[in-house]
Image (cartoon, rainbow over all chains, first blue to last red):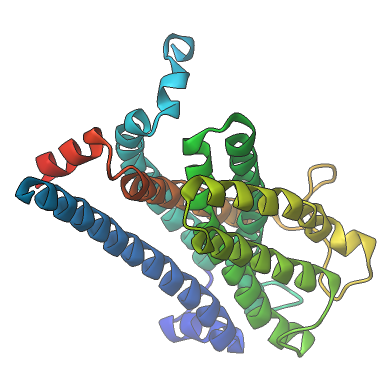
Amino acid sequence: MHWQTLSEFFAMGGYAFYVWSSFGLTALLAIWELLSLRYRRRKAFKLIKQQIEMKSIN
Amino acid sequence: MIFGINWYKYASPAAFYPLAGKLTPWFYGLASLLLVAGLYISFAVSPTDFQQGEAYRIIFIHVPAAWMSMFIYLVMAAWAGIGLALNAKLSSMMAQALAPTGALFTVIALATGSLWGKPMWGAWWVWDARLTSELILLFLYIGFIALQAAIDEPRRADRAGALLALVGVVNVPIIYFSVRWWNTLHQGASVSVTTAPKMATIMLTGMLLMALACWMYAVAVVLSRVRIIILERERRADWVKALVEVNQ
């Protein structure tokens, strides 16, 4: 570990904006992908259930 | 043991769906472990670069994302091609599941490259061969997704998408060799199969761990997505109805 203090770590030698934006953006995109998959899965299940209900009414 | 399994069985969506479901948590787990190890080496162990200071740490996400963007494209085109040649529905579904994650890694590669280019080159973007061909890769992914979405009949959409994906393969070697074929602002390869890596071992270790983490993440996400695509496209099949009724 070559960082002396936590603030030195966050400062990234003056490149904080570029380094943290890179990793932050990646994290956000991955979280968005995982959440959108969860939403799409629920939607697919809901659609199939509706389809089954429609069949049983007829 | 491998030879005892009837692999053709898993070419059917009904058999593949539960198998993918069993594998997915393992890949998410592996991705998490590799990510923790990779981030630790990238931020805590790797020393400051003597030329670029701390800005070089962007390499730990930029290069893995760029590798994945090209690798996923090749895998996607291969599955799409198999789906086209053998009329295999599940193969086409795999290609469809790979496209959004490939596009995502392309966006990450372009965005982190931009965030690295600004402090090092003084420009967010330059129209150089490496950057331009990577941007074309993003358009290929978007084109593949849009083309499939625009065609209502799924098997026709698969065939049209496969043609586009296969034609676009020519762009991948252009991206890879662009730094050698043209004079580019983008630096040459730091790691290649034929020569010794031009970077410190510890930095290389961090980068490879991050690349493996991205790879395992991609496998997990794509397996999750292909399962949803199976549900969407096979929703009239009896096994899907039975599965949904059991689950809730």
